[in-house]
View (cartoon, rainbow, N blue to C red):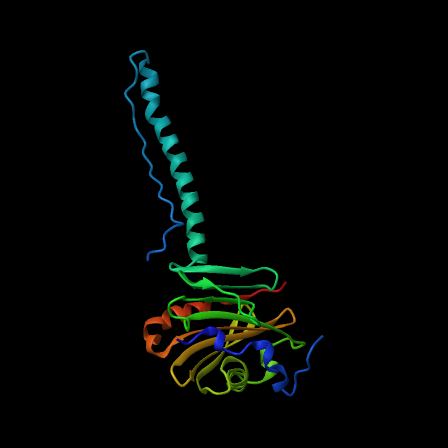
Length: 240
């Protein structure tokens, strides 16, 4: 069975030296849903209450109901914000120290692998995983390394696939997210007994070269591709 640990460690390959202009620098996931049940009851007035008190009761009931509804709306708005930040079927990862966040599919497990900052994988399908790598750099923008296709080709051949695998770049593009440039690309890496179909996104911030890669066995690509695109699209870097 193919294992993520067969992939080369990013620290074992002089990837940054490959760029001539770069100098090396010193089920249904619904556990968070709240069910709120509201019930406003109008009780019969005790015999001791006079007519004026009885006439006041509807007004008081309306005030109480309005207060309850206002509290419910407040809770609903809070839950809406939470739902927007945490997509159904995914769990969030936030690294405040290195300044990045992303989502990964519910059910994947965190594993420790040398040279990787974060790794989550499916325990049954080990090629279904996501990893984050960080390298120091003195560049300020990913575009300083070259166009998307050139950077993607170099990264795939020298870092993301072992040298004995045949690789093919399918697509590479640039996108801007909150004023920060990202390169995102899709590729295939063929080993003797399996083929991995993968997605990567890269960017620069905080003096670091960030790489997030996710993928799956080619035979499961059609089933997994939407989830993997969600992982890629969720990757955000902040200044720390």
